[in-house]
Length: 317
Image (tube, rainbow, N blue to C red; front, side):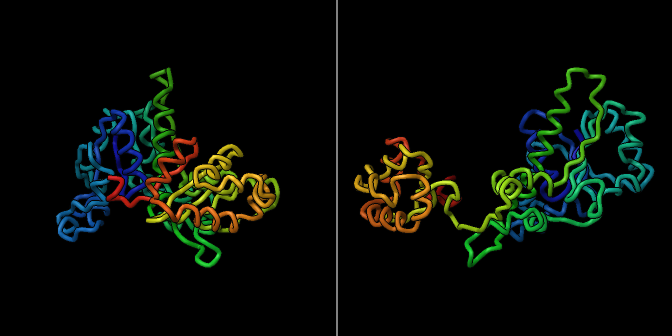
């Protein structure tokens, strides 16, 4: 497969397919290459064109530089297309057409080519030519409006989730096209809009509005649908607890030594717990202040309650 992508969404798509066994050839612009080569925490690696942002989603690929504006470059490109099952690009809509190598041109000689175009807003519509990076999509998809607390929102998610979701969506679509049982009828054009991909993941946030007219408000680390379900202080650090079922709530009460809370009318039923979330959180945090997050995680897990420490990247790695 040919990877004509830059920065993150497209490279991440092809990176996932490489993990699944695809032979990926990354095609870059001579000289500068993928912009991600210059991005990362180490200035020396950035200057060498091997920024950590590039390395994160381009391992396992072969690479070539082609001047797509030259006749020789286009000749080389067409030879590569002839031996490829898939082409992925994330230019703005129309760029490949202006270069004379868009899908309508390529499919004439390569009818079985799977052509995947990833963009911020899709190949048609009033925003099709608008530039987009991850944070733009996070904002326009509504993600930032529900991230953080009422005091801090809107906030972006702490990693490029829009690029990643767009890339995963594209990889899923390409894999689905490759799964066509008729090898002589696989050719297709796949249009992946990052905005649509992210919006489709917002689940009940969107459903509550469509069905009930309810606009979700930012709630920090609390779970809108259940309590106790969120982040709680312990004796040495935070822990996430997701007691979404009645029996899980009751198990939490037993584990932390507060079985009386099970029959407290403020907390005995699901809606009561939601209505009195802050009071319940304070009582549980007081009880858990006597031991470590690791202790409570193990004890809660043993009782069938989903729980886990809040770890940093160095800790999890």
